[in-house]
Image (cartoon, rainbow, N blue to C red; front, side, top):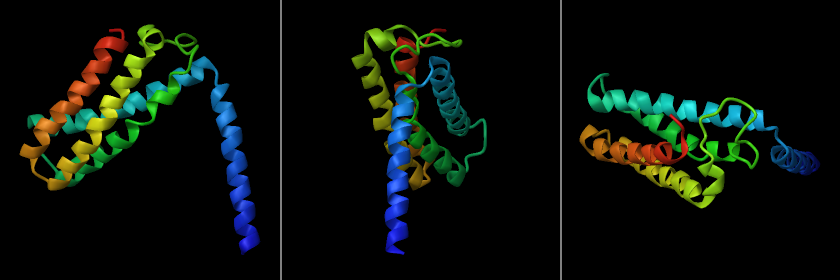
Length: 152
């Protein structure tokens, strides 16, 4: 059993190293498609929660919490899809400022990553009145990035 564990660990490490090298050499069109998929998933989850917050959809605390958790997880994923050179290669709304002012872009990503755990915490209360202001802050984090780094 111990030999199997060592073999499995070695195989996992090898895959991680190979995967890391492959991620650095990803074609620009693949990076664009990857990040667009993650950002679309963020939008999907946000729209469902927004409808509940606005009263356009019945509030369901368990469903809201599930989407808040998904959004929190997704908030860490898209940023790997913006490597240098992925400003072209497939249709994209990414502005050049992502690469020319990368520090500001990374701060915008961090803002979202800082707000989404607060939304999960608020969602766990089940109290829509506690959720609304936190959801608004998440929306502001999304808007800040869209305003500066996404072409209309």
